[in-house]
Length: 361
Ligand code: KG4
Ligand code: ZN
Image (cartoon, rainbow, N blue to C red; front, side, top):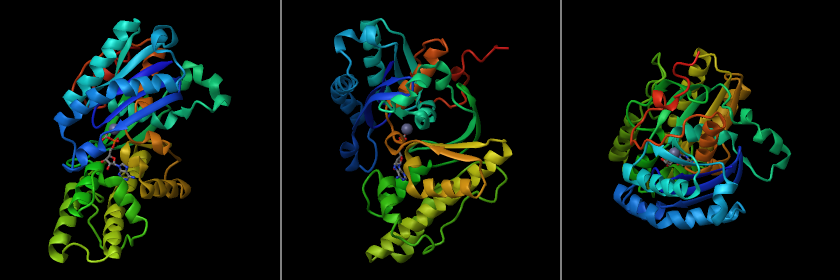
């Protein structure tokens, strides 16, 4: 049983997870704080994490049916996101987690935020009691070999996952992340931050073929992405044509932009899965909540372009602490060292993520 904290960006989160079964997952979003600035303001994020953290921890402990005074006996370990992210925001969660670890005498595992996202499709609700037995087995915490598309506000990466800590970067964005493109285009269209969920909702009623936006890097023989040109193409379209003068015009622009992002993400991911012999494809991170992207991957799996497509339940696509608890729990189950190393930018294939694999036979 692991209690985890997540505060790397604009969500303050705490969760209690038993194996892969989520006993509680509390997320306090700062969206309203940052929305008026059109993006995350790091200094405000740190301050709001400080305010939110204790009530969020209390709520997660209560919801899990644990006793705050007996956490040392009721939990096996504490986990916390220690990289990558806004350094001030990370530090708030890490210092609170250090306090909890000191007070309880429990080991404290630092978790890479994107490794947390890799665990999100494996999470199950605690009510699924039928699977309780399997979950307590440490093998159930193993990451199955797969190709992961990590798509969030800060990252767009293709990672070949061999198992825990065994991550090979196959491709990445050369400029903006996919979520960043959604947010920037939403801003251009006068929509609120974060724009991803809003564009997703509007795109459902629009014509994806209304405007033909560029599909960057699609014909290149690599697995890298580029989204800044697409954002510029939307800006140029708006300069030439002005803001859409009808609701349908706005819906069509959203649908056309989303179609361009989805087509590139799906095509590159399927090609990478084939090239790397990966049967399973996992799609994780905030943008994995996108209905167009989920639908397109389902279609690709049905058409046999990939073996199978797995994603997280919607509530675990965005930032949460349950995924951090699962990743911390997997490290604990293997007896890996409990290390916390706050760092604002660590790549998913950094050797620090696989301490035991190094030198292992
Ligand atoms: O993983 P996440 O919650 O935080 C980071 O680690 O960055 O991802 C946030 C990103 C934001 O850019 C947001 O606009 C995007 O995920 N997002 C979406 C959707 N829901 C969230 N993008 C497209 N469609 C969505 N439904
Ligand atoms: Zn994230």
